[in-house]
Amino acid sequence: MIDSAMSRRNIITLSSAVLLSVLFPYLTPYTALASEILVFALFAMAYDLVLGYAGMLSFGHAAFFGIGAYTTGIMLVRVYPCVMPALLAGVIVSSLAALFVGYLSIRRSGIYFTMVTLAFAQMFYFTAFKWTGLTGGDDGLQGVPRPPVGPLDLTSEITLYYFILFFVFLSIMIGLRVVNSPFGKTLQALRENKDRTMSIGYDVDKFRLIVFIISGFFSGLAGGLYALLLNFVPLSSLYWTTSGEVVVMTIVGGMGTLFGPVLGALGIILLRDIISNFTESWNFIMGLIFMGCVLGFRGGIMSIIKDKLKLYV
Amino acid sequence: MSAQFIGMQLFNGLILGSVYVLLSLGLSIIFGMLGIINFAHGAFYMLGAYAAYNITSYIYPNFWIAFIFGPIFMGAFGAACEVFFFRRLYKLPPLYVMLFTFGLMMAFQDIIRMIFGSMGVPFNTPESLMGAVNLGFMYYPKYRLFLIIVTALCSLGVWLFLSKTRLGALIRAGTDNSRMVDALGINISRITTLVFGLGIGLAGLAGVLVAPIQNVTHLMGMDFLIDCFVVVVIGGMGSIAGSIIGGLIVGEIIAMGIMVWPPIANTLIYLFMAAFLLVRPRGLFGREAFHD
Image (cartoon, rainbow over the protein chains, first blue to last red):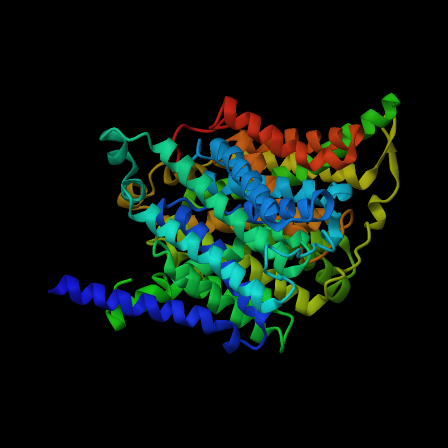
């Protein structure tokens, strides 16, 4: 009885979410804003796999986002102007980067993990900054084209929105599958009590590395879509401010909920868009949001939804 | 490449290393006491440089006044931050405290940008320390030598304070087991405030010292702080010797990198850190599973 009521509620929530995301570009002031929200929703969801489910506070996720963006951009600009292979190259390279960073940084847990991930992200940032021949350096990678994919003309903003939406849906489906699988449950066990998980025979480091790579994969996808969306790759996509933004989106939305970070991305990007009309001091506001979340909003938007509306998503 | 050029670069590495040492020492003792990394540490360093600028431009145009009162002011400011902000957060998991310091860092940076602009502010080398000294084999700027000496004295002072005084012993005890120290009737929260003030004071001192030789901008802290993370990963968090030796190693690696091929200088330290994580994950002097 309760089960069927819950699943009915789930279906209602899910279908309204689908409907909303299809209509969404008509509700925002301009279409590119809706697309940007989608891109960061995907990025935040990918990040939540690491922070929310495995309990690892990575401060270097800009690396995978930026590497995805740069690889996709470089493929399109310098190698071959075809979208799908470029996106594929982006996720492969960012997954490899996640393998490299993850393999080294899971040797330390807790705050060391945080410091080491941040330091490695800075390494990629400096590499992109100095290697101007490949990346365009400080100016970013200019002139990323949007060649058509089959019958789809991606130069139309609205088509690009639905193109991105397709990938985001696919990723959320895979993400849900991951967190509800035995693998995902093990991750949560590991987050709650590492020693106990280890003592019942799980290879904790292997699980942490795998989720880190999965997260790097989706972050790279988000980055690749971001390059398409902007028609260029800003150097700031690799900078620590981007890592900070995805952390705050995840916390504001509610970590460990997968849908929460999507809402967090929506809230933060909309807020930034509104505030940038009035002031340049976005970083100051961001800092206040960080501090405010820690002081009184640790559960995020999802905890409000769960407590007040009794929705189970 | 002449021997003189190499000597010059070795000394420049020492300068850079000195600043790393001062920042990492503060980072490390705060970590030892509270078990958090203070992301705002770089912002406090930046504020130290701006404090020096404000003292010399608006209060009294003398570097020595800024040199003495800048760090004291920053230490007091840090202690006040501990009392008003951080103390409320200790019951939370360390993750939240770190996020809080990250937010504090972003807010500080932007406040400074709003007040002083994003171009940075000018700062001159004090007249009494202008010119160069003949070291026998080469000439070296006086101010830079002064910076090295101050850092060496400070490191020695911090080491003596922590290892030879009663208060230092209390701090070390608090690092090992703060609840036990509290149970023995020592006011641990006062010691925590002191440690925080000391750490921030050292960051402030580093900021004052680099003001004449580096661009004073609102962004000077964070990138530098990330380098300090490399220092403490290599040296071992919570260890004074680790901060000092790690800081000097990282400074020298960058200086040597600049000599060989400048674009790779910054990347080298991260690769070095990667190698260290493979060979000795806990760092040179780090304790196994300390606050892990």
